[in-house]
Image 1 (spheres, rainbow, N blue to C red):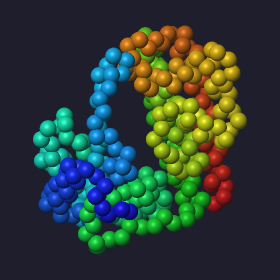
Image 2 (image 1 turned 90 degrees about the vertical axis):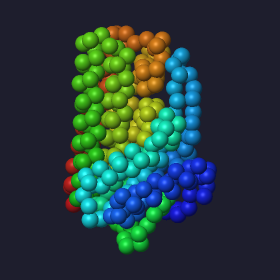
Image 3 (image 1 turned 120 degrees about the horizontal axis):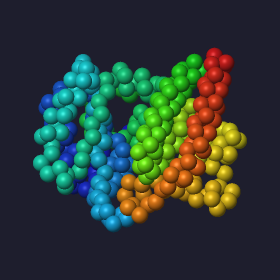
Length: 292
């Protein structure tokens, strides 16, 4: 991991130095403080203001900070970090937001040894802001098939449950005639199902909302997936693009039109994706077990 934030503007460096000082003062059990995310990779947005579909919106990247501790529960450490939040924010509308996560060093090293995708990426791209020097971060080891099966099952269960919950929200919105809400939650259902496939087959994923890219990333795992959104005529293309655009436009574009007939056409496709996802992921997880 990198150890310098000299690439950041002076004001950002000052913010991070202040946060590190406050964490160390209030949380002596902090062993490491690690910057990750967009400010670690240099892909951050300082401030962006635009009008989307007539609605003014603004965005700024967060400081994502992992605080690694020993000798204190995650819950107690989290309460202390909430206090650091309170001290830091003086003008929340204009300050760079900060998001803390905290982990015990033993738990973190276990995640790294097992190659958990979030933590391995964090270790690869993160910047050490503070290190007590008392602990080392573990290296990823080769997993046996029982461990691979366990991880794949955990990831699948989480994402598939998310997808099922989104479908419940689709049904509620549909019954109320809220078709823009319904199409947005159909998009979210698909997103979680595609994540479930990627994680079950590779144990890793990255944040992605573009359904075209997500569907392309999993198509090699089953020929059946091509039948969900065939896009082989004008109507199939329209329905897929309606679903793809829903992530943004269902929330921000007042002129985005979705009809009952659209939902009636898209819902069976998403249910087909759900059934294929369950089938191929369960088969893949079983194969891991057969290799034990």
